Image 1: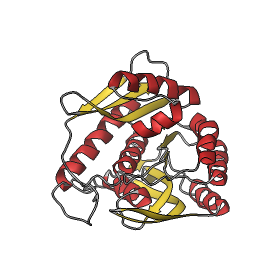
Image 2: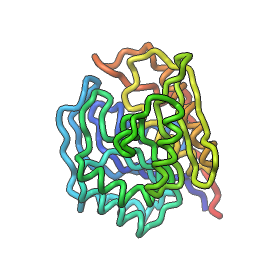
Image 3: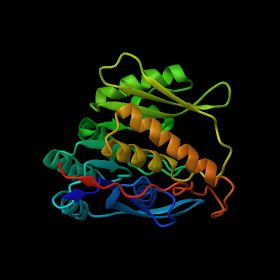
Image 4: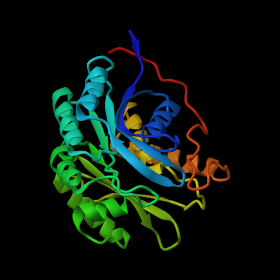
Length: 276
């Protein structure tokens, strides 16, 4: 019997198509895996910003997850925006029940345009209930500062923050968005049990089309893990995918604000595996 590698994304819906569930589905599909979804919130947003958020009832989120996990059985799960403590609870219960092999959690707290996307009560819930069940968490600098209480002005402090964040219980932490002296960018990956972190550097691309890059990166990592890559390998491949997506879409005009990257700059045919 043959099967597709499957990834479930649990996140909010972006009606403009650049971030959230929409970006996740594009990413997973572009990398040759089968995408399933559970929507946690409906947002009103476009390239200029987020104007409203409506959480989906927790029971509906639970139902979506159970429908996918009992039937399609994805190997990896990506978790994105959650702004309701009851939704955090049902996701945590689902992870404990179904025990997926990989869980990549992007703790989306603030949008690119500066809109707060997570309430304080939900932040407390994700640290105590979701992070201990995660394979990898992927906070950006601002989110890492909120979670650690540490100002992060440089790469050395990013390394410290990544080690501190491991105390929440995940297997690995990727702190995103560091700036290098030469104008480049740096992300820091700290894996539990490893003495030194892995640094991923890249040249900065001058582009307004960066809407949904965090969503895209985390769903790409989840997909590459589902395809059998190691943690460092999955992060490296996902970083390259996002970089090329920004590069190939940097001169395209979509909307009046921060446009999306090009998810389909080089789509991969669907992987098909023989059942073990």
